[in-house]
Length: 443
Image 1 (cartoon, helix red, strand yellow):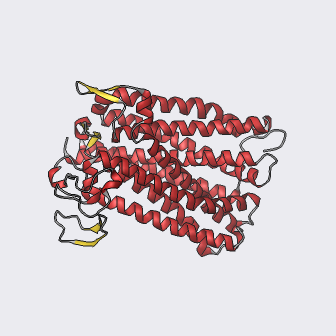
Image 2 (cartoon, helix red, strand yellow):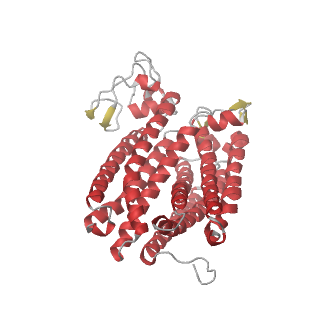
Image 3 (spheres, rainbow, N blue to C red):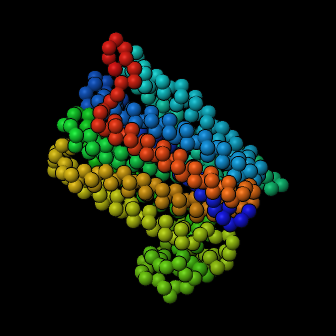
């Protein structure tokens, strides 16, 4: 396989994976927010108004996420057959569990959640909404277990070059899986909260706010800084875990070219194999105990990891960009909270400039998730399974012309789906809740 074909195959897979992860994270965050709203909506009021609007957005994101998972499964076998041949005994059951939980939990209870509210008691409907949220969490859990296993293969053993499952408990709860799931959950809640604030700002620009808008606005302003901090903490914990077991990622993040004693952490530099072009440094000589190393420990350098190290520039700068985006997002969230408190959490009083800031929060949150997931996936290169299976060895032999054609079509289709999702959100923000069923004249 040529270099161009390998890059195209990787780009296709990462594009499908990123598209699916975005909607799965949004679905997960909205699911638990809807559960909290439904708990508060025993006698209607603001929580019920907010629930009735956002349950439609949740259903749309669920459908988009489920549709995005189908081409991802096809690409897994078509583009990386070697991965399935060598690690299918682990990947297959995990993918199957994700599909089963999606069908049994979400699909079985989703209809009752959307259409059975007026036919069920308050307690029964709350339980249904909770089961949908649980199903979304279980689906995301198995996906995160699979991604974490590729980063740190625990709970399985290699027999004659083929991975075999050793134990479900160690596979699903060991390694980086729990931390990666908590990070994904925090990211999903962050996406959901920024989307709720953005749509509330747009909706109240066209009509006066109701109790539901004010409830969402206040909860979103307070919840957003909390989720940003929690996501940063979980990201730091994930980095602590992965950097300790992935020497190539550690060398790229720290920018250590020569093996030996740990060097100071560079904050920003130009991609070079020497330290002569460094523009700024943050001297963190005591970072090694944080990863479980001693200051006198020898660290592998990138020069000694030729062919086994991830792309230096993408790994190095994506880690810094994630920190910058987190800080910028937290700054904007605190400013929005301060302004909302001054206004008494009344979104009608927002100026157009503040509304633009709230709308920009969505793109900042989305950019943060893309950069974070990009760093996680790219930092694992050139391995498909860390330390065991090279990605090039798992790739299929496909012509470049076909890969180009599929990649262009993939961009067009995903672009159209993304624009359609955005248009539906704009339609919902303008016209509000559209009835999905009528029973005796009521929506």
